[in-house]
Length: 288
Image (tube, rainbow, N blue to C red):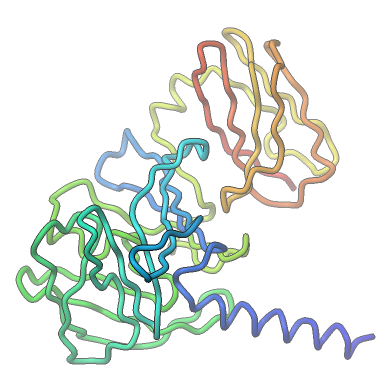
């Protein structure tokens, strides 16, 4: 039995190690935060979902949602081959987004979502290896030839500014972005140093938030009460940190509602509450 469990553990580790290095996978999700405006922080969630043919070439679609996880905006098309990722925006011409084959001293041209005509020329100043959650990945330090600004790429994860924001500072002044978390198949494989969860919201939301959730943290198996101090709750949705919806309750029409937590594992979740007038409030809860 122990040998069987060991074998399964090895297989799972190999799966994460191999597939976790591939960038264009529908199991991958990126949580990104804008960091210039402290009073207007909304976690951006990027996902790859669906495919499209352009001529005879097959691409995957990449989307973004600004916290709601209900409204997804199409961002462009991706394809990956031989550790190189191409991105096609609105001009129907693909350009290199990532080249995970580069070595120290190499110079290349790359794109991002803000590039219109002139690609960004960069060179590799440093190449080393980092480990996140037991998975070793190559890390590149890139420098802009024209501006001298820098960016880090992580193998299979992409830019530490976010999947489509590599070298954004060459094309746009503000805001700026940082990669907060990266998940593969709901498994957390990267979290920004110094952070302990994968969601952030602006401080204004805490000031005017009419929602009371208690107890928070809540012990698994105990009820969680959600109360609206100023009106009616219409619906509730609960998401894990990778953005997967776990529960959806509609047609509540009451100022309080109780959620059973027996099926929730220990961790942090996002509760998305729809109020009268279709106002949306997002709050974090912790299950112990």
